Image (cartoon, rainbow, N blue to C red; front, top):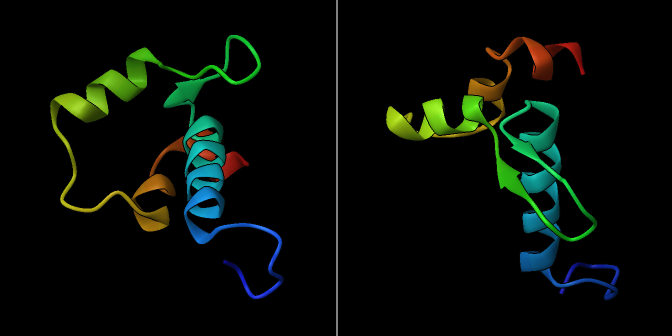
Length: 66
């Protein structure tokens, strides 16, 4: 649990990962509770980085603009 006791750490990390990947336009949400990988996300998967973190995401213009 998080220190607040209101959310599990795993759920919190998943939420932030989805949020950041959506802002980087690597994921999209066509419906509530549904996520799909975008063509840009497929390109990242074709040549995966050694580490997918905020430093990597800052190289993506859409994420940097966010």
